[in-house]
Length: 575
Image (cartoon, rainbow, N blue to C red; front, side, top):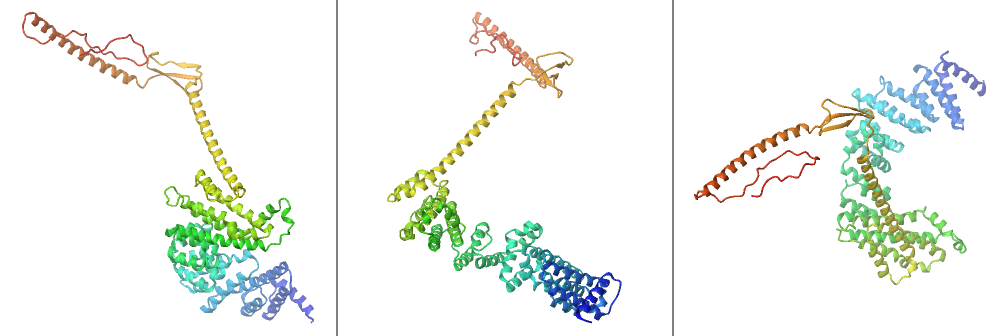
């Protein structure tokens, strides 16, 4: 038979093998699988290759285990780079524990993980985490831990695939050996170790699995955070300042040495500030700012700007927008932001520095034209740098207006920089006044809104006081009207009921107490009157007696009702 005829014959047999109609010898089965592997190798498009792999996988699933030699077919599909078929065979190698020693089982497990990682489909690669979890959990239940040690050899590859899923897997299976997990990542790949710690500390894990994030965070120590910071300083130095400003679980002195070793100026300045050296921290930031401005000037100098282009209207505004996307310009703005944040944190009224920190930053920006030597640059390059400095000054002034009094700011500009031309400060002063004007308008609008609310509340209160209810029917209770009856509106509109006031009993008791008191006072007054009359009679006979007193009417206390007019009377007497 020719090769073409043999291929047609093998394709024909494979269809009936797939349906389970016939059975063939191991040699014929091996030739059929070899034919399918060749088709995968010669196929160019990803779709055809995927279809050929699916045919091999379907055939392996349909055939009984005794229809082929597993090791021989496994070597064939691995050489042809068919990971899913190899994965199928490795899974059977893990499952068939009888007659398979531990080393072979671990080998099949590790190779199965590699088959997942070699697959071209990203969604299929993500299934490796569920596979590892299932296999390790089943063996732990059986009392075997042989596969756990094998996972350590592939942790770096799993982290590079998905650090969040790897952290979740570690939280479920390896939380007791977290130190060993981190150490194994350091040996294999420092980048993988950083990504693993970053997924935990940056709270990316909490967005995916809050329980695993809580477990991992509670087991991280200060040493782990220091390892993370050291990797960050080496691999991603621009992230160190943001980490230090939002976390506090690190050792300041060790972190300062680390930042100084890798020349991370913004992070070093922040740590100096935390140590109390605020002036040194600001000086370091400003020196770094000047160095980055020099780097930006050299970058602008290398730009090819035609001498006639800078005369076009709107050229520099368009060019400045394009310049803002460059890393050199972003470095300058980031360092200025660090300096302004430092001033903002230390410019409270109780601070000993006051407004001096802000003025130091302002002086450096105003004097930047001198140390940049823009007068010796080409006009088009100097114009670009002037626009950059103007934007930096405006950013500084916008931050200063809420911390520095306006008179002090104007006095600083007009006194310390009186030799400079006013045109150099025109945009800065105009922007400052515009910002103050905006704040005044916001404040005035807030006050006006408050007054409108007060007037509206007062109007609503007056309406409630003067509002009446339309009564269509009154239900009169037994006893009729009296001074203490109360008219109550029922829930139904237009109906009203007359009730006795809740103060009626109180008023009645008060009337009784008042009458008893009046009786006691009248009795006492009567006794006093009899005594005075006796004294007058004794005086007429010439005998001794008390000094005569004028007669006064008896005291009368009558209960009065509030709201009822009574005739004018005099109560009490002068003693």
